[in-house]
Image: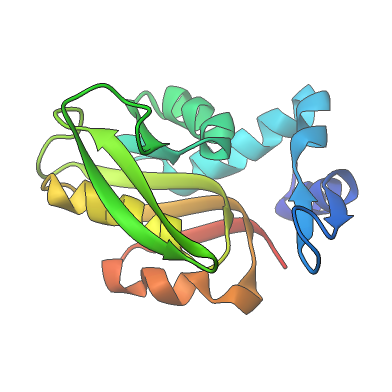
Amino acid sequence: MSKSELIRNLENTIENIPDFPKPGIQFKDITPIFLQPKLYEDVIADLVNFSRGKVDAVCGIESRGYLFGIAVAVALEVPFILIRKAGKLPPPFIGEKYDLEYGSAEIEMRTGQIRPGQRILIHDDLLATGGTTQAAAQLVEKQGAKVVQFSFLIGLKDLHGEEVLKKFDAEVYSILEY
């Protein structure tokens, strides 16, 4: 499938839910993709094409980053490492706090799953302001690895998340951009 066909199919499949989870937010519901196995395969193939030969492991951000990230890691034949909300992983782990529009949050990952010097892809379903993704990259760097790529199903350009990630000197890829 060509890139333009993939984009067209995704745009026709992803549902826009106005005013969810709060007024003014236009939620992009990606769950209809999972009703179409071939479309899901095409998404994975596109993401794999971006990363093939360039990464040693994939880190996925809870929870929707797992939906594609695990399949990408399997296709690339590299490990998949979970990045979770605070309090969900057994020790030993490290955490990183970050700010949200409405407060703060923390993510964690287990130590010892990333080796120093590894080239890491961080994957999530959506890039908005970049706060969560930046915190994930800082967790990776604290363990001596290098984030070389970020990938997303959707990038929201008006929220400037890509600008936040520039300091990591890594490739940033979104299949769809709004």
